[in-house]
Image (cartoon, rainbow, N blue to C red; front, side, top):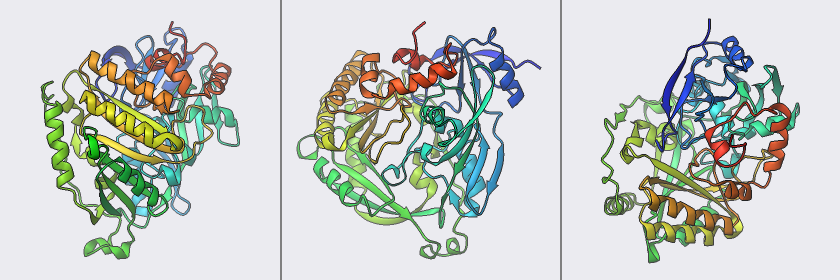
Length: 457
């Protein structure tokens, strides 16, 4: 039976500039192979998971967007070794439900569990523990890739390593990730010791992050992007380690992997465009800083890793015009100066949102398009206010380029071809692999053409 193809308006999670696309959801692997083999009906293809990348990396207006929702089976799970094999449409939430009761957890995780395994690999996602455990790709043992010619290739760091590493962080442009094997991380409970530290400015923030690098597996900070003067870069750091079962109280000590269910909230409608402004964000930032004193708490994995998952459709807060997420990475050597320049620019424009995050990153991996290297990241949501947003992003790009930094493809909506080439010096290595397995550029995306990764026509 042929897979139905429909037209649908698609965008990234930021809702910035939706585009009409042809969309299909193959019901099986054989149906997926059939669509890839049909070059006449589907000359261009792109896989899409749950649409949680922020920009246009999972949008393709000139081809067919294939949804992975139906390809979501867990193939095997070794309770003793923590080795998990799944189809690419399995979500991180699905994985947690399967493995956590047996004392295993994701090796690293982004700020949402509503991400598919294939999407996590294609974006080489990272989390609060990159400085210790690296990106998601480091923990992928092998993957099955459906290539543009219809053949399937199993690759790993030892088998077809160049194709493997080009696929890690390759944004779905080397082929279709059909199945993958992932090494999980042993965990003693579903809970974490979290130390809240208030830092009065950027200097104090960086000092605490450097001091605690070897003391905490997980670190993340909310940062006030509108602070000025001695308050520039003030933050609240949330530093975490695994909690042992014996550290828990009451019934949790006997059931350390049980997390009581909570009722999720929902943003029922889009906020008016004027709701987020300098005054409202400044007021939120003042209150948020004031009500989070230094303290030690024990929280469950949902509260620590996925606080926004408890609010469905939270992106509606930014209104129908949407927003872009800007995630900047500064190398260790220039991080203090680069972050200071970026924060001063953000404060001057007054467009930064209350969802601003600073994190520590560790060494890079062999993937040519993987985002992180040793340094610090600053991620913020910028409301779409038109030309002023674009001008601020351009100025931030100039700062990043001057300081040797880069932007994250999974978050990007605005990067230019010149900026992309300057920020990703191993691009040639990726393109060499891409030409060898997909010479006709069947796997493409709106983002790939926008940044000059692929031809525009």
